[in-house]
Image 1 (cartoon, rainbow, N blue to C red):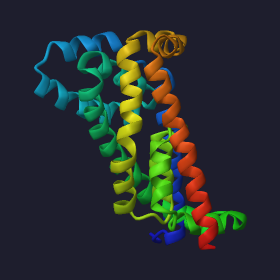
Image 2 (tube, rainbow, N blue to C red):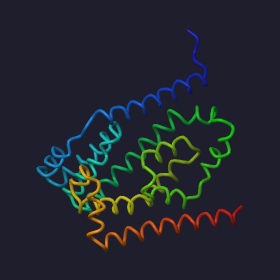
Image 3 (cartoon, rainbow, N blue to C red):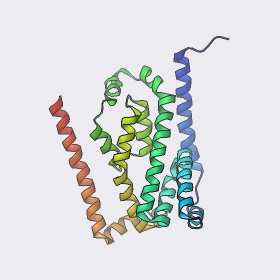
Length: 232
């Protein structure tokens, strides 16, 4: 039997990669994680054990069922409060970064590198040299989902060590900001997102700190753009 060529093998691996992403999305649309049962379980188990189980479930379930991440975050915020839930979610996100980056790197990078359209070649080539400040900015900005950053970084020329360091430094503030708000809003954040707006309006310090957080991100992005222009 004739052995498959490297190009055919890479194409097959990428097809499996794309099919896996579609399957994960489809499962996430069809499968619902019960926040009530999750909270009941976490409340009835000692903190040390429930924390370890939460991180394990967060990594496993949110990898296979992406849309369940919000359920886990809200449950953690309600059960553990903003500080402990931030730590647990951070550990889970770091584990997810490792899994998704290497999954993407192993299954899709070779095919993308050889078959990406010519008009994207320069962008793809530059992605490996993206400034560390930009990596921190992307991880700290709530507008960029962690999942897509992890997968995209795996397809690029970024080294895992560089990306992982950016994850470790850029993610905590973003996670804490969200967990603090979720701890205040509670379960209503899942059933009625408008409650988040109402919570911010009723808690002016949190609203102003959130505003300053986004202003800081905007200023940081402008500074990095200015530095890039000077380096050209």
